[in-house]
Image (tube, rainbow, N blue to C red):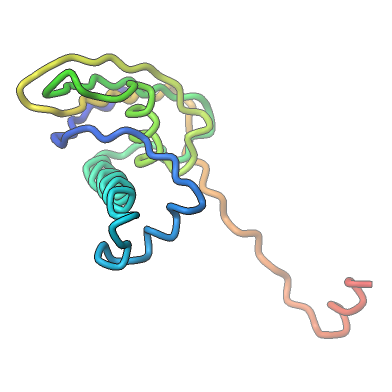
Length: 151
C-alpha cells in the first residue's frame, strides 16, 4: 500500500532540545526574556510544525507504530537556497507522524520552487501492523497477597 500526501507549510528541520531549552515549552514568550527569546521562537516553531504535520497526516490511515519496516520518502521544496540538512527535515516529519519510528526507513530529495512544501510518500509492505503498547492488566490482590508477593 502506498500513501501520498502533501504538507503545504514551509518545512522546518528537526530541533534537538537541550535540557535548558525544554523549560521554554511551558512558558509564554514574554517570560523567556531577551536572552532566550530566539531559542523560544525556534522551539515553538518546531513544535507548531510537528502539530501541523500530525494534523495533516491524521487524514490518512496507516500504522503509527509499525511492527515491521516501512518506508517514508519525502520531497522537499524550498523557496530559497537557505535551508538545513535534508535528513533533519526527514526526522522532523517522522517524529511528527509516527509514535515509534524505529522501523521507519526512507529517503529525501530537495528542489527549489516558488511555494515551499513537502510531498510525503509512505510505502507499507504486506503484513505490517500497528503495534500499540497496551498496559498489562493488573490482577487485583488483597493487601496480604501484595505483601507476600513483595517479600
